[in-house]
Length: 429
Image (cartoon, rainbow, N blue to C red):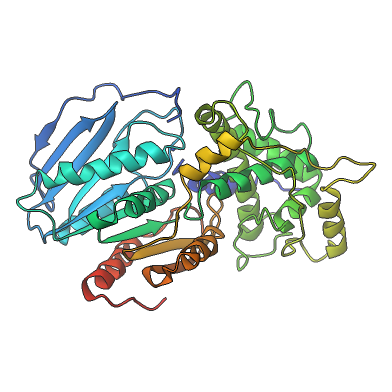
């Protein structure tokens, strides 16, 4: 089988990880950052913009609207590459959404955090700090305060809401790791472990060992495409494994056709998970003091939904998945143990308790290659177990990609939240 140039892969992979949280060894402030400054925009919805720095290098921006409606929004950004400079850059169409909501009269505040990478702890602290900073610039305390976040920022917003429920009135969680950090790391770890089993030696390092030299996205893409060109069955086996449901767009062609969006999105999901694993593992190990954050010691890999073109027998894929567990004569997938301190760290930063006391609207693409949709049913179960299902509204979007929501969808989702908060009536799912 020949895959030619796979023209959509680069765009799919880059779009999937554009919202890519600083490593403990990453950079601090971007060059040229100044102390607190106040500007008065000549156009647009803003009467005043205040920018400054808190903590060890955390930047913030406060937007005060010309016609304030009495409410405020505190936003947490998505995950960023560990070594990326600390800035207040645009991400996930933040600036467009901010200005549209500003035109509706909302005050708006956001932070860079003081570090990137898996910065749940720091992100929660910096995001909660925004409340006092913004309130000091407003004529009165806001009547209603909302939290919002994308990807890792959605988990940050939930953390803040669960810790300080009396300070906020609602949460909008978008494309979020709402099932918790361990579930996300387990997924990308399982994808990497199975990829190494079916395609040994293709990628440097392993699930818990960073490569000596980091790979770029094009390098990962080149290696992965070459491997699946030689043996596409490994791709289908990973996608068909219940623990690694690679996202793809099923309405858009046949996964057996290399020119179809269905196939290209499937390969894009594999590349996204593998690149993110390579990017994340040095950062995560820095936070767990070098101890393993991944565990598949007792995992039994099982057949999920078959993802393979018609000529490939289901029995063949099922036998490959069964063999990945190992036999007396064949070792199967490499096994890893998580250490108790690493497990405690990941649980603490962060697995939601589900004890919601304010409305939460969670929006997620059905086919998300980086933070799979399975986070949503997991969060629903956590919330149900805590007896708080009445405070959770979840909406799935029939789209492929990570945090690539249209601006109107984000604004309408926020309006759904505010209507719920102001009327006290939970909207229909």
